[in-house]
Amino acid sequence: MYKVRTYNQISVKGLERFSRQSYEVGSDIAHPDAFLLRSHKLHAEPVPQSLLAVARAGAGVNNVPVIEYGKLGIVVFNTPGANANAVKELVMAGMLLATRGILAGIDYVQSLTRISDVAEMSQLLEKEKSRFAGGELKGKTLGIVGLGAIGSMVADMALALGMKVVGFDPALSIDAAWRLSNEVTRMENLPSLLARSDYISLHVPALDATRHLINADALAGVKPGAVLLNFARETIVDSAAVLHSLDAGKLGRYVCDFPEPALLGQARIIALPHIGASTEESEENCAVMAADQLIDYLENGNITNSVNYPSVSMGRTPGTARITFCNDNVSGVLGHVLSVLADHQVNVIDMMNKSRGELAFNIIDVEAPPAAAVITSIQAIQHVIRARVI
Image (cartoon, rainbow, N blue to C red; front, side, top):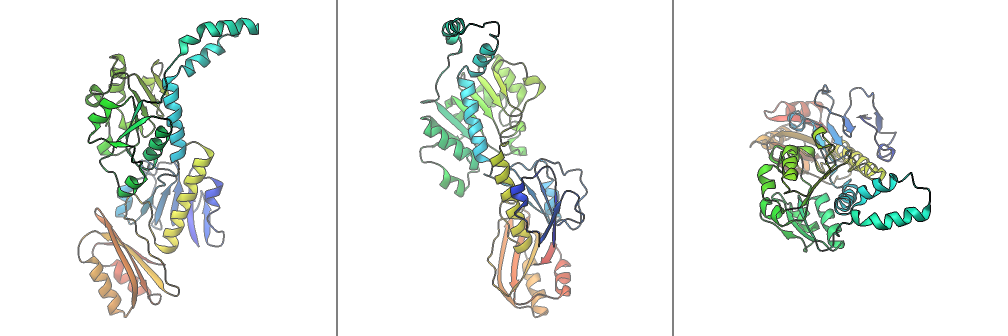
C-alpha cells in the first residue's frame, strides 16, 4: 500500500484517482511515499526517509526545495498547462480592464445612489459616458514573453481577437514550437518585443535567470503607453522600476496578480489577489494531473513533468519485475549496475537511461523479482542515489 500525504485543500477529483485498495491518502499520513500539495511551503519541513516523490498541483515550484530533493532521489512533479486556460482568460480580462473604462465606470455608477429617478440617471449617464471611453484590442500588438503552455494559449486567444502577436522565448522547446501558431512573429530578443508591443504579457517561470527580467533598463525601451501584464510570478517584475516608468509617462498601465503595498492606490495599476489559476476547473485539472503523475511514478517508475529529473517512460512486459534507480550523472554508473545484475544472474529484458543536468534516472525490467541483496548491492555503488524494485 502506497501512502500519500496531502497539504492544502486538494480537489476531490484528484484524490479520487487514488484507489482505496492501493493507496492511503490524508494530511496526517506517517512515513509517506509521496507528498501532494498546492502552495504549502516545504522548505522548512522535515524530509521523511520514505519520501519518493512530490507533486505540486500547479506550475510554480518555488515552494519546493527542488535541488535538495533531487540530491536525495526525490522526484518533483508539477502540472504545466493544467491551469493554462484559467490564466489565459484572466489575461484577456486584464487587457480589457486596462483598455476600457470598465472599473472607473462601475465605480461611477455605484456612486449615484442619490438618484432615484430612472430618467434622470439615464440622462446623466448619457452625458458622462464619454469619461469612460477606451480603445479596442483589435489591431493592437500583443508581445508574449514565454511561449509555453500558457503563452501559446494566450497567443491563440489574441489572434482570435484580431490582434497581432509577437513572442520571445529563448528556451522555446520543440513541443512548444509545435503548439505555436505560425501567425506569431518570433522576436530575437526582449528589447525588440518591448519596443513593438502595445500589450506585454509575461509567462516565464520564477528562476534566478528571470528575476527582475522587467527592470529599469528593459522599461526604458518600452513602447510609450504600453500595458504590462504579469500573471506569471511577482519576482519577474521590478515593482520600483514599474512605478518609475508609470510616473515618467513611459509605461501606460500595469496589470498584475501579485499586489504589493507600494502598488496600491495607483490609478494606473490594476492589482488582482493572485487569482490566475483560481477556478474550479483549473484546480481539478491540476489535482488530477498531479495525482496521475504520482501514480505512474510510484507504480511504474515513469516520470512525466518532473522539474528535477528527466522525462522517462517505458511500457511494462507482463510477468517482469522493474528496477529503478537514480544517480549522479557521471560515466560508468549504469555499467556497474549491470555488472551487479550479471553477477547475481538477473536477466535483463529491457532498459532505459535518461539524464538531466547533474542527475540521471534508469528503468530496468528484469525477468523475475531480484533478491534483496541485489538492490542492496546497487544502492552501495558510488553515485547511486536511490534504488527500488516495483
